[in-house]
Length: 299
Picture 1: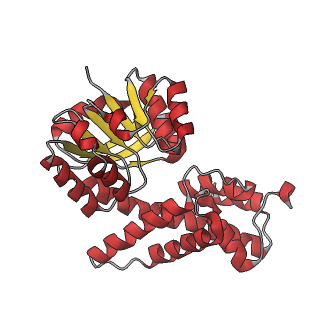
Picture 2: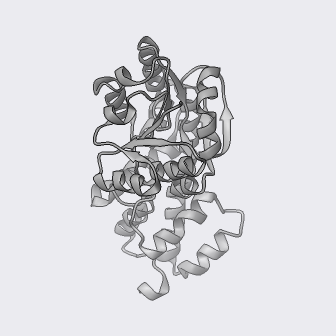
C-alpha cells in the first residue's frame, strides 16, 4: 500500500492536505506547529510529533517548507531520508534556487531516492481550491508515483523536463512577475491616496482596465481593508525576490524592477510586517508618503 506524507502544514500546505484527503488518499503529516498538526487530524489525516515518524515507510514525501535550507534539514540532516521506503519520491513544492534544487536531487539520488522538482503557484486560495499551478521536472518514475497527488492539488501541471532544477528555474522567473506586480499594485494605491483618489473607485477602475493584474485584483482589497493574516507573508517575497536577483546575477541579467520591488519588501519587513500578509508592503509606501490607502469606513 502506498503511503504519502506531507511536511509543512502552513497556509498552503494545509489546503493541499485537505484536497489530498478529499481525493481519498491517506495522508500522514508533520508541522512544527501543534495547532497545524491538530488541524490535519481534524481533516482526517494522521499527524505525528516528528518528521521522521510521519515519513517512516512512506513512498511519497511532499515538502511544503519555506526554503531549501529547511528542505535539506528535514530530509537529510534530521534523518527522514533514512526512514522512507527505498526508491521513494520526494516532491519538493517549495520555491528554491535552481542550484539548490539540483544539489538536493543529487543528494537524494545518492540516498536511493528520486526527486520531483514541483514548486507551486496560486497561494492559499489556490491551495484550498485544489487549483494550484505546478512547474515540475523530474524522472518519469517520480511523476508516476506523484500523479494522484498532482491530480488532487493542481489545476495545471507543467511538465518541463526530466532534470531537477528546471521547475525551480521557471518558478523563480515567475516570481519576478508576481513580486513586481504586487509592489506595483501598492505603488498605484499609494500614488492614488497621495493624489486624492478614492481608493475604492481607483481599485474599480484599474481592475477593469489595461493596468489590471491578478496580483492587483487579489491583493489590493487586503491593502484597503487592513487584513494582515498571512495568505503569503512579506518575508516570503523578500526570499523569493532575493532568489530572482540571485538568478539574475548567475546569468548576468540586469533586473532593476526586481531590485526595486525587493527593496520595498525589505522596507516592509524592517517595519515589522515580515510575518504578516505580503499586501502589507503598502504600509512601507504609506510611511514614505504620509498618506494611508484605506476603505471609506476606516477613515
